[in-house]
Image (cartoon, rainbow, N blue to C red; front, side):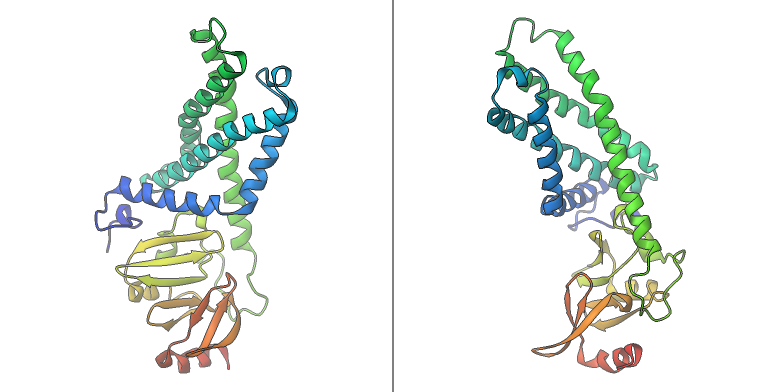
Length: 286
């Protein structure tokens, strides 16, 4: 079988670092597209603008503080988000415990976050004499480091707790013979930890398959036929030459232009191929 370190590469050049970086960038893009992410960032910006740390309360009006902290904290939030995703993926591939990977992400993120705050402090104070000395910079580093470490570990912990809740709860009360929560197939073990094991569907893409869970998706270097074989213990079925679907995640059936279509709990529309319809009808009892 394939080398686990090359499973998430997005190109024929499958070095572990490139694939981890490519994966992290894709996940960052998905994270930044979620409205809740920006709601949280906006709330933090609002609180910082109200509190006015680093002399901004005395030297700026409230609208100026909103702009100032908006720019500073958006850069910091995106930087830390990327570092957490990247470190978690590298840690997963290297077999490093998630808490260590999160702490390392926080440590690395301390430098750019502290740098942006230090520059912001200089702009607010007009680069007062002594700004370039080590003392004020070290003070910012000391104040930022514990927060960066704590936030990194806390965010990763929350994600893992959410995954645990998802896997422990039944996706549908009408599921037919659901698989026990402790049953983890070889294919599920190949997915990044933050995606969990609750696979909704798997789609073939060239030499890869894309696995979808409620937390996102990831590319795995594997043929769909091999993925189907490894997913055999689950309550799923191949419904198209390019699709495997978890029957527990079928929300409803609709009539498409070329025949029946499955609508999943992720609102995906998946056609049921003609040669797969008889077996599908037998499985779902239609």
